Image (cartoon, rainbow, N blue to C red; front, side):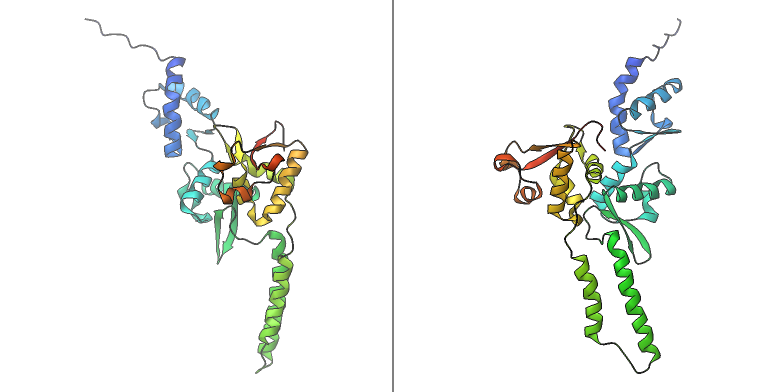
Length: 271
């Protein structure tokens, strides 16, 4: 008796497998050709192309969840991450790609890149870090203090007065405490993109304000209002005030008639 001929694999079969593959990519972080069991080799490139259209990054031999999304999950779940170890923690990323992803996240305000001891560390957005603009002032203060220390050490048994050291460092602290300027609207839009929820296409404003908290809540509120005024984003009030807790209310700029603007939509073409 002749064996049955196998039913040919068709586009509908591939479409039916895509939800399962998306879930696998979300769970594993990366998919390789070997993970596409049951999909003929001739269809695998098309499968990865289809997954890429649902925000899976295309690799030569497969696909992966975007590194920015993987980083956000890692920072939320694990906290600070040494940059040198990111390639081990990220799926489907080389050391160079991991470092580039960390740098990009820091530039966009989605994370904080800091030097701790001799190690570069990536921290969640909102970590209490010095803005780069203050580093030069700190360097000058430390250089001045180091010079005074060298002079005193050469002039034995001379030393420094605690009040003088305190005054030098307090000069820097006082300068750093100046009122922060609002971030540019373009920076606000860039950070908002990392917080857009796929289910609604909206970003929760408190998430953004937490990410930029080092700039000051009032300054971020002003930047949000300016971004809305210039047509980059649309700010929407909370439909029910009872849904926000006290902290979230404080993080939302005030809206009309006593409302709070808790949701933001990035308008098409905004930069």
